[in-house]
Structure formats: structure tokens, C-alpha cells
Length: 337
Image (cartoon, rainbow, N blue to C red; front, top):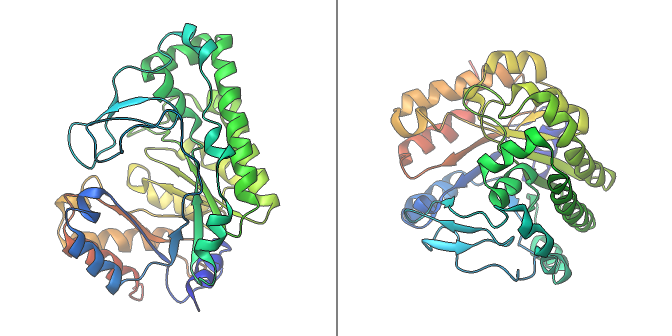
């Protein structure tokens, strides 16, 4: 069973020889601890790979994320980072005043100048499952452009400018998804961080009225082209899990340990694939390898019923020891007792 077959069987809730492996790692690991990072990947080869970026150069982009203390992203937001390897925070939102919306232009050159054939060339002959990453993150993009506090007021007041900006972002994302749908990759991902530690950041009813239709459109384009749909959100998102299933999300990456893992498994195992993850708030940075192994076993007992549907995945942060990451992947490949 090669990597692509293993991933596709997992997404289709079919038995596999082992859970597919995937790993995200922050620059504090990939750069500052590169020897450890490469050693882990050699010991536990990943089954998923992310495609080459096809996008053109944004008119707004300046500096480099994770490296520069101040940089400007592709949509014109200026970020400030307090240390190397973190994304930072927005100090002065570009559209803090709605008066700036009239002159704001979407960075369509990202798509106008994109080379999606580059994606196909980069994966030609590979037997690994390939995911394409997109810019689609409407809730977070609105926060980056407006500021979080302003956006929460906007969602309460519903000014026409908010609807205009959402439509601008949506049109961009629809065009982006259509381009990805024509490539040879197997899966496409989009994201938004929707959860606090204990609940959704807005009411589920408002989420369904404003944001769910956006995601439904993205998923429809991709699924029509035979692609698997991957979605990421941090935080407690139990309230919208049924909606993600309904719109056709194939795999969800979420902070399982913010929620009731056992209840999640009883309700959704076999309906959606769990794309990680282990507890990276407590167990990974502060636990011992034995704690990591116990955490993996808890996830597997709740979600892994021998019918696929779960990935051996987490994000490796700078405080997480090599020993903990090694224990995680090792425990995932052991028989579940």
C-alpha cells in the first residue's frame, strides 16, 4: 500500500495498514532544530505532501513571514512579530475605517500571474497524496483587514460595507478554487480559526447564515472535480461539525483536546476524517513520552475503529521535544490494545 492509497482509503473510511502520517512544524523547529526535524522525517516518512505554490507576486507583499519583525502580507495587512518564527499580530488594520474600502483592490495578480502547471510538474510521478493550500480564510481575512474588534461590531451591525468586502473576498476565492480544481492534486485545503477554548467565537446561527454558504461553494467546486476537501480550524468547533459534514468536507483538522473526544468519535466517526491532532497546549510541550503515548491511545480508542478515518498528525512547536514527537509517531503505528 503506497502513501496515496493509504490516504485515500483513510478518507473513504476503509481499513488501512496504518494511519497516514502528516506533520506541520514551525520555523523554530524546521530552521532552529533542523537536524532533529530531518531525523524524525527520515524515521517516519510522511504520507501527505503539500504542493508547490503557484501564485504570482502580490502588489502589497513586503518582507517575509516568520523572519521579519514587520512585513506586509499578500492582501496588504501589515504585521508585527515579537520574535522569529511566529506570524505576529496586526497593529493597524488596512481597512480600520470603512472609508478606505472604496480604494481597496484585491490582489488579483496572485491569480492573474499564477502558474498552476507548476503544481502538476512538482508532483509528477509521486506516489504521495498531495494537498494544495489556498488563501481562503474569510473570517480571519476579515479580521486581518478590519481588526478583530471592528469585525465583531460589524457582525452585530451588518453594515453594507461588510457584505461588500465579503463578496470581494468570496469572488477571489471562487476563482482560486476553480483554478485548483483543474490541477492534478488530490486534495485542497482552506481554513479559519473559529473556536475559543470552550465555544465558537460567534453564534452557530450567524456562522451558518454568513460563512457556511462560502465554504459550501468552495467545497462544491472541488468535489465536482473529484478533489478531497480539507478544512482547518483551531478551538472548540463542536457546534459546526455537522455543518462541515453536510457541505462535503472530507477531513477536518481541529484541536480535539478542546472538545469531548469520545463524544466526537461516537457522533462523527465514519462521517468525516479526523486530520489530527494531539494536544499541543499541554501534552506536547509539557508532557513526557508516556503522556504522549497515552494521548495517542485516547484518540485512537475514540476515533480509530479500524476503518480509516483518522490521520497521525500534529503540529511540532518549538517547545516540543524530539522525544515526544518520536513517541507520538511510534505509538500511532503500534497495534491498538
